Length: 376
Image 1 (cartoon, one colour):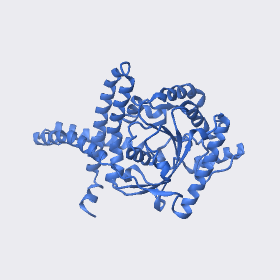
Image 2 (cartoon, one colour):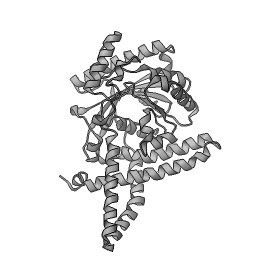
Image 3 (spheres, helix red, strand yellow):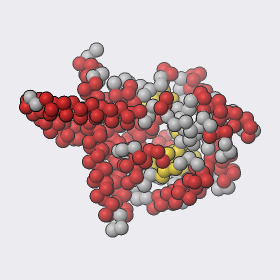
């Protein structure tokens, strides 16, 4: 094991990375709060500023994937589709099987210049998660309770508000509604059977309301739907903790572009279109499991240096005073100060671990275990 590889496994290094992320995030959230005064004066300028502030936070996680762990992401698509990346508003449909699927999506948005303006239809619980939910609030992310009767008006209003967004946005939808587990899959397929829908092997039954509503509300703004099917070579199941420990993964992403005019305007027909899409995604996953590859031409968009430069900037700004302060505490010889400092370190460690826990499958929501039994 080389020295760099050894450093990547050390808890104190993880703690310092977490410290930079959390403190820089709080600073960014405070600046975002201050930018609210811009909204009534110039809404579009407010949006552009917050896109860049969000980039400064999210790109630190992308840096961990690209530069710290060295994870590689390969696209399987066609040249015409790749040439549209970062040049149009789109809806992204991504399978929800892995703890870091969102991070693989973010690394692609970063490489094509739309990380700061990327959007998602997120569960409302995330709104109250420090850094993540707070940053999303200022980005006008659409939150939902995943109960359509209560969500309908809120979701429609939030989507329509994005119709004049000034920067190209990729709007992510996890149409399955929750991460894949064997229990959720079994219940989901019982629902599929009761509705006379074909069973899926690698996905949960897609929930159509969010998709059809997004298509209806963003028609005229969004140019296309990108269907993204993600898997990892070697049958790996990566985690954010693995990334933090410097583990390298190889992600493959099959991307297909569907012009929005090809998607039916009728809600029921659009829902049927989505069900058919997931049957195709299932076939793609079956092919990947058998052959170890997706169809299409391979592309490896190069990583950009800005994520690393951004992290080094925050590390320089925040770690220098931390080291100076820590040295002063221990040099003072005061047991009270030393205990208070160690308590702060322990609290920071706990906070970082809690943030990582948000991504873990085993700590995911119970949504889907029972909700699939209810009529959509």
